[in-house]
Length: 168
Image 1 (cartoon, helix red, strand yellow):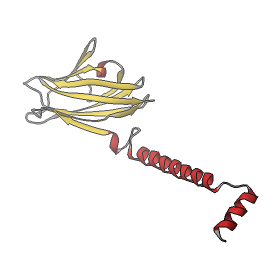
Image 2 (cartoon, one colour):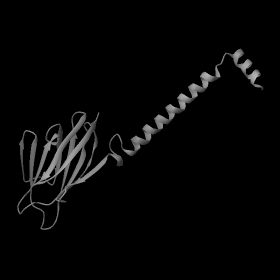
Image 3 (tube, rainbow, N blue to C red):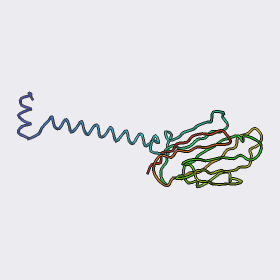
Image 4 (cartoon, helix red, strand yellow):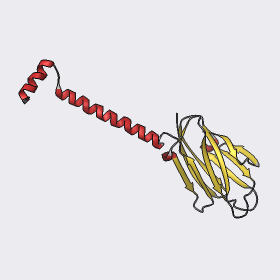
């Protein structure tokens, strides 16, 4: 068909080819956006995947932690801590800021030998690890409301800042 015949046929049928092309372009952009959201979800951007993992180490290497920095409300996540006691005696882990408030500790392994609380702080005392070894502590965290939670983990003077994004 010649261009004039195509234009005449379009006029008779009542189609607007330029408008149809804009609709098709919009649909392709929409499909691409949906595919991107699915891929990001599979990668863990919305929690529970490899992109949601974070780790940190104190400047002196006395404490290191691994956690999910993207969490979901009501879902347990793990905060794995490895640390050296700064002196002989029990290892005292200090949680400060948001880690002692809007985030609930739903489980601790191993069980602490003692615990004390103050506004904005939690102290957990553990039996010391064998000489020269790191203590490994697993905290199960559960958030009760969405938002950004900032806090700090510390053993003695060594500290690590933590930041969690809690999604609904």
